[in-house]
Structures are given as C-alpha cells and as structure tokens.
Length: 286
Image 1 (cartoon, rainbow, N blue to C red):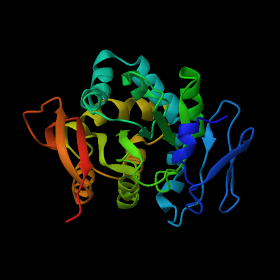
Image 2: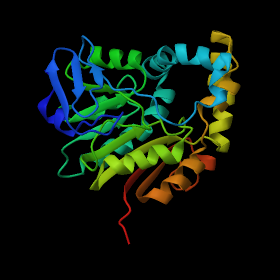
Image 3: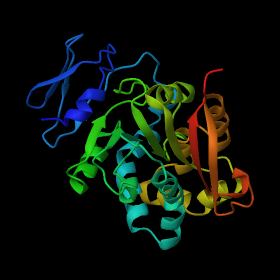
C-alpha cells in the first residue's frame, strides 16, 4: 500500500486528474482517464508519460548514448570513492543547501528533483516526507537499496505528478544544467511549490574559467581514456545550460534569497568558482 499522505498530493501527469487510486497491488489508477501506473516490486512509482515537446536531435549522438548507460556507475565511483578534493567540491552545494533547508520551518513535503542515487539523502534528518524524483529507473533502484523506506517516483521534470502548490521545498542539485527545456521545467517547479515554499538549487559553474579548466585537466582526460568516448563533446550535450543561463532564467520566475559560491564566495562570479548554490522563493503576483 502506497503512503496515504503521498496519494493525496499525486496527480495524473497524463490528464491532470487529482484523484489517484491505489486499489490493487503494484498499480495506481487515475479515476479521470483510467490511466494505470505501475509500482515496482521494490515500491518505486512509475509515472512517466510522453510530453508534447520534441526530443532534441543532439541526444541521438552515439557517444552521448553510451555516456547515458555508464553515467550512474561513473558518478557513483567518482563521488563516493573519489579523492577527498573531488568529494569536497562535489558536496559543497549539498552542504550549503542542507544548512539553509534545516532552517526552513513548517515543512510538510520535500521533493528532490533529479535525486539520482540519493547523494543528498545523507543530509536529511529524516526522509519520511522526502519524495525522490528521477527519470532513470536504474538510479532510483540503487537509491532504494540504500534507503528501503524512501518514497520514489520515476517521472519527467516537464510533467511532474503533483497537484498545485502542495510542496514545501524543492531541492535540485546538479540537474538544471542538463535540462534542455529550461523555462518549462521551472514553470513546473513554480506550479507544485507552495506560495511560501523554498526552492534550493545547486549547479556546477558551467561556462566559467575555473570549471572549464578543471574539467579539461581532470575528468575529460580520465573518462575519455577509460571509457573511449569524447568526454568534452558529451559534456557539451549533457550540460546544455551554463550556470549564467540558469541563474538568469531563474530570475524570471523566482526571487534569489541566498547565494553561495565555492570555493571563492568573496568573488561573486561563476567565472572564478566551481560550484554555486541558491535558495529561491516564489515571486508574488503584482
């Protein structure tokens, strides 16, 4: 049986219906359009449906397809087993966001967008009210093995399966640099976020001098040689948004309440930093 509180905030991503029924094992049903959604044996809810926007042609690149297959294992190995410097850099945005989110009050539901294998789950005091969302079922299954009690949904950020305004906090770390339809994704975050809710985002400083130099000297060499792919090309496809583009687009939809750069927060530019973390709030209607 699916968590009752979670059932109350789910909506059908196909028709928008807000009455989802869990009337049989491993199945959810939309009472409006009769669309069925599968729940895997380990409890992951699968709510992927096609959206109207076309798939960009760049994603058909052979190296990119290969990267998508190996990416979960590469990230897991580099982040969880990599050297201390890389670990510190990678987790910097997670740490800033955790400190900000700990200070937030009256939090009912938290959604971790692009949760992957659950790296940010280490920073939650409790995950009873955390919903992990990712398109990749394999990474969700790996997260579920680490956190069997986790509430996980396979869904598309452009068509999130939540009713309007019911989420207290949205967390997304190292995801929005990947999203081709950036405006559409941010409008979905606005839609599900409570008027007093907070949106926490972490980004690599893609497009910055230090970030580009660091990649060229480290991961580009290592991964290109180890996996026989053109890592620089793959990253141009994978990271389709620079940090500057994401931040400027965010300003159209949200207020930036807090900003933290790593490692040189006293230099307020992505040009000479590696990671950026932001706390955002809803813009109030005029």
